[in-house]
Image (cartoon, rainbow, N blue to C red; front, side, top):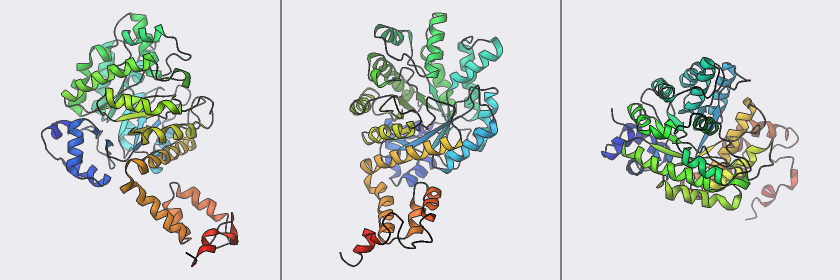
Length: 426
């Protein structure tokens, strides 16, 4: 059965392409054209049936991902399924299972079973967990362990993989030559860098990339080429190690597309405001327009407890410059395993950032929502305003505190409401 990219290359307009086009209010042939060019992907495993597939990339609404999954300290499956539900209710377009607790396959299969949106993973996490269980050594795995895990996850229905193929002996040398304040902050990147150094072997994700493509092609898994060397401090942003990895990812992306495998590129990270546009431009140039999936970016290192706002600031700017896919950041970033409230807050903050960018990128579609809200405010139609809010529950709670004192205005201005005062005047 052909992949969606292969269908596009053969000029076959599939039912899935038509559905995405309808959701995005674009012409189906535009989806086909951009799929063929590699500037749009539709992450959906052949073995995964979901209610809400999505397209990611050029000309489409900016998408938001929510990370969930167990940790070594917090490993209740029930909690992660509740987070999954919250992420979807509040508007996440995809979720990623980043579990590193016990029984990662059980957790993944339950998330795949209950998710109505595409599901991604970072397979090296499960590889490391299995190595710890079997050999009491996180780095005690080999290439065969990696590919067995990839095959298992693809067969189970995972829609997109984060593959850290850009951390190589060569890119680690670039990192060694110019010391960073914070070396490698990617968990998957650190696992593979440690493995490369201990075993003095090349990264299997890079060395045996064709084997990954075989698996991805068979199940139509989208590859998310991971930024193992992303900066973890604004002081390390856009350095030689980061760019060296990006160049490797660009080469691998072209290899993947030739094999009819869809690809997105992951990006930083901690990046100051004045370097965000440069980072987006570099990715689009080096990776030939492949969809860009970014964490934040976080524009300062000091927002502990408020990193959802930190990430939303960077995400809005990055997406307005052309980033396609925002990985949410929660208030608990750098501090603890997120709870349900953190997940909700992170999703909403990233959705605000995504929509703010879409007003710039695609005003024809995005501004309809804002226009409807402005009309409701002009009419002081509180029910419509609540319904149109990005978080209707919170808007409803806040509005209730204005009643029963004032029925058609809020308690901020009361009878001095500018909109009410201007009625009939202009």
